[in-house]
Each structure stands twice: as C-alpha cells, then as structure tokens.
Image (cartoon, rainbow over all chains, first blue to last red; front, side):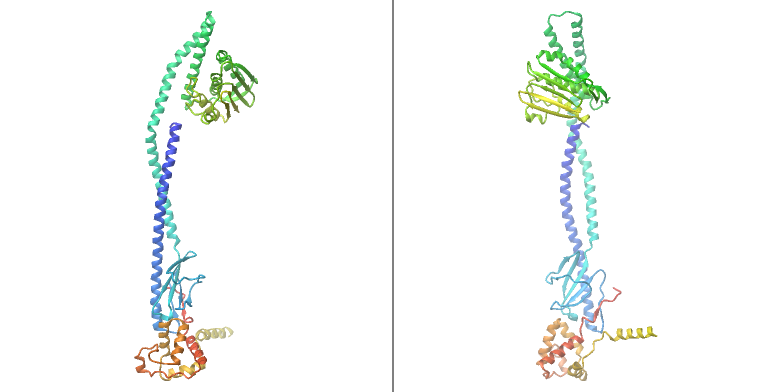
Length: 385
Length: 121
C-alpha cells in the first residue's frame, strides 16, 4: 500500500469510526437510560408489593391485638411505621435525616425508599416507609453488555470501513501505479540515449579537437541534467525496495567529486564558488543516498542561482551548509517545500522531486535540516548529522 | 446453684419484664368499672387507633368524650350502646383525667408490642 493511500485510508477510517461511535454512543446512552429506568421500576414495583404484604400483616395484627405483635419483613427490605402525626412507631433501620412523606419514591445514598399511606389506620399506622438497596448488579450488567455491544459494533464497522476505504482509494492506487509505470518506462527509455551522449561527448573532448567549446559545454550540462533527473526518478521508484548499504563514507571526497561534476554548470553561469571543505569527514551513510543528497542540493543551488552569483559550501564534522545567492523562496512556500512534485519556482525546469528526496534521506538518517531563504537574495540549506 | 438462680431470674424478667403494669390510679378510676360491666377497653382502644392513629389525637378525642360523653361523639357504633349503657359525665379533674388517659394509652402502647422475629419469612 502506498504512503498517500495509507494516509487517506487512515483518515477515512478515523472519521468513519468516530462518527459511527458517536452515533452508537448516543443510541446506547438512550437505551441505557431507558433500561435503567425500567430496572428501577421493577424494584419500585417489588417494594410496593412488599409494602402490600406488610399492610395485610398489620390488618391481621390489629385484629389479634395480642401482647406481642410480630411483623415479618423479607430480606433485603427494611420497614418503618409512622402514625398520622408522622411520629415513629416502629423501625428496622436507621432513618434518613429527612423523609419526604409527599414523595412516593425517593433515592438516597444508593437506597430506594417508598412512602406508602394506609387507611384505615391498622394498629394506628398511617404511613409505611419501605427501603431497599438499589440493585446495582443488574445495572452494572447492563452497562457491561452495552460496552461489549459498542466494542463488537466498533470492530464490525472497522472491517466495513476498511473494505469501503480500500474501495474508495482504488482509483488513487491505480493513478499512482500508472504514474510509477510511466516513470519506469520513461527512465528506461532515457537511460541509453543519455549514456550515449555523455560517452561520446567525453570521446570528442579527448580524441578530437573541437572549436565549438561553448556549445559542447551546453550539451554536456543539458545531458548531465537529464542524467540527474533520470537518477532521481530511478531512486524514487526503487525507494520502496532499495536495500541500503550503510557504511563509513568519505563525505569530503564525494562532495569534491560532485563539485567537479557540476563544474561545467557553475562555470556556465559564472558562479563564484567559495567552498570550505574539511578533509576526511566520514559519515555513516549509503553511497547512493549521499550522492542524491549532495546532487540535489548542489543542483538547486546552481539552477536557481543568478548569473555571476555566489555559491558557498561549508562541510564540517557536524554540518553541511550550502548557500546560494539566487531567487530565494517565499516564506509561505517553505512550509510545503519538501512535498513531492512541489516546485516553489517554475522559472527553471524540473519535476519538483529534489527536495522531497533530500527530506526523505534526512528523515531516514535522523539528520536535521533547516532552510532559510530571502526572496531575491538567496537560500541557505543546513544539514546537521 | 448460682447459675440456676441467675437463669431463673432471667426467665422471670423475660416473661414479665416487658409486660405493661397497670397503675393503681388507672385501675381505680377507669378499669375497675370496665371490668365490672364487662366493657371491652381493648376494643375501644383499637377503634381509636383505627380512626385517629396518633396518640395526640386519640388523647384529645378521649378526653373530649369522657368530659362530655354522648352517643354521637363516641368512637363505638350505636349498636354498642344497646348492650352497654352510655357513660355518665366524668367527675375527675381535667388534670387527673388527662393523666389517666395517658396511662391508658401507655398500657396499650403499640410501639412496645411490635417486633421483627429473627427468622424472616
């Protein structure tokens, strides 16, 4: 799966799951409230039933009126009896600080209380106050079941979302595959003619005396530019499967070599080169990655430099700094400069993949990169390793 | 021996300790007449309970009736007076009458009679 495809799929899945979760949570909350109310209703009903039993007992006891009046109360119910002046007659539990005789059902401290009026007043009892602990087990079970349901639904919708996401990103995948295939075909077709041009140019320069030196130089620069684009495209294409050979590399030597490679282009633009390259700087890096890093930074510094401008290169044990006096980059463009196919300035040719490759390499090796630029004054790229 | 004496004392307390004792004043001023004429004081109290519930109201109604007895103000049904003659106005002072009524209510006190057996249903 491609990175952009993955990103789109993740974003879709997050939004899809979040919206589904919100919808299900609202539904579950309504259902929970309804069921909880229903469970409490059941407990209220059983409390009322027990109160009815006590009323019946009071009626019988009133008739008997014996020396001892036993009142049978089922567990876990508790009972208190009050007369018409709300004075306590009898109680099996510690009464709450206040009892609202006008309210039939109340909940207090995890307990359900019923105030049930009696008439006529058997044994003088005008109110039966019943109390029972609220059955939290049933409510906890309901909560567990709802959580399980939401979890199950979440997994189900995750699977559905994944399937839908793959379906929606299929056109994107096809486009990327087509582009990759196009790049692959193009690079393959470019390889042979570029190599032929460069080889023959070298042969002409070595074996034959040529009067058109300037024209030859232009052909060389153009061919090298083409060759670099070819290398970049090949690097990008192979980036997924490329196995890196990270080794101690003489970065100073490589930088000198690449400066020689760019010499014609630098000379053609009359760029004043000021380089401070500390010798024998060793960096742990794959040679291909190092080549692409240097080539892209140098190429940009030359390409976007002005005629007769300056190019400053500093290589130390900690840093590589490449500073040009070119057209510069606008501040808002700096935010997105590392994106693939991003071109801050279209005055020069290119695909906009150079800094994307540089950023990719910097990320792989955990280097730090900073770009500072002033429009029409120049750009400075610093890499810290 | 000591154990047997202690057990006997405990049994006596258990059997008679909770029973409400009738005061001699209540016996003289009220219950004696009830016993002589077989007037059921317990049934009368039960009817008071059934109708008025609270001790305060029962006391008020009893004092009112005993001060000025009439069939219309009685808690008992009219048929009751076919068997038992209507009561004559009381000669006790208000203070003494109120004391006797209090003792009468205390004698039948429900609060002390009600209990929850250990073996619940």
